[in-house]
Length: 500
Image 1 (spheres, rainbow, N blue to C red):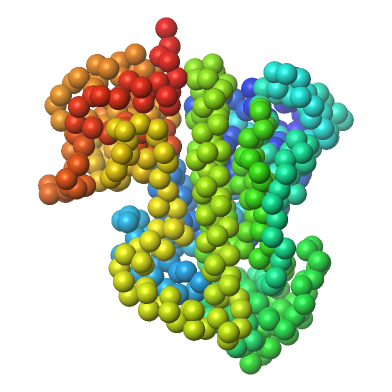
Image 2 (cartoon, rainbow, N blue to C red):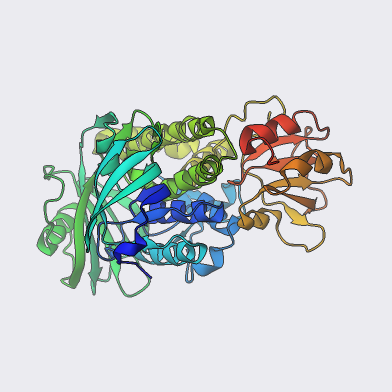
């Protein structure tokens, strides 16, 4: 349910989330899950219904599983592998047992996340627009306009989830580093065209074409015609233009069919100087834009929100110092930089003429090396991320990485990672030793102690296999060890000092 009434807009809120796309909805839900009721607004009177993103990377699916909502995404179509610049990589080479999924329009993703956020107490208020925001020393004085006029809201924190043309980013004057467009693609959602299922795309001498079913009789086609000049962003795209580009690249006509929606995008990219400016923060496309190679954009944006949500909730509730928010930038900014590098490399290999074919062939051969394939596959899947936890105890091979889905709860047999659905951090005990549990007792309202065992009898992460793990609310291992040295500093670093 979307609330319109003026009395739904409180005069003071701990967090104002601007934008109700996937990242804004995920952030609103994460904040509510961790004890903060945000105000989530969107300028549109209703969701756009457009679906640029069509699926999920493995890491995003793991997040949904950790939060207990994976089952809400009905009709996911599993994909057997991933691709890098159109070069296929088998899913068995991923460092996860999960596989990516597609044929799930972004509009449906927003419906699921909006329903979850509302259940947790973070419904979307629309149509409300952020007109201005001015710092007050303890937050921002925000002027909103909506169906009942203007309202002034005092917000302790403001988070921009409002896309590439972010008003929050402009209001705080955050510098942006931009790379101009060098190539453009036309996108169309069609019916009755009989397009082949080529979701990884096919490169031709005159361009590239990608096409795939969307699961409801609709087919998506993306055409990059090397011969066409770059049009200004936002220029309307017609069905006739898509047909002409397709025929020029493929060499055969595209059946007439019906065009339901058409748009264009380019390989222009951008990244802000910082994801945080005091009490204002940027998430998703408001912080970074790029060529949508491999469908990474929405997924990385959702992962931004998950990284920020629990930290902002702890700080907003006074449980952790504001310096904890600095780790949002230090952890996610390198991910954004890698995303721009990754997608730019794919663009150079896939959206250029025959001059890059020798490079493409060399990379194809390198993919015969398992380690190379896994590295690239994990990179486009969000599985290669490792954060610096700042302590020797969070050292290789475990610390800073995602908690592997290889443990089950002793008492119930459930997957340990699903215990993260409560929003708490986890202390995973793989031995009967209770010393770690006793040390974590002062944080008992923030840490769930779980006794676990490996799902596979012979599981072993290597010679330094730990017996206990401290897992942050976002699923990353902050501490690991057989002894308890460093556990208390790690708990304090990530969860603040224990409550009295």
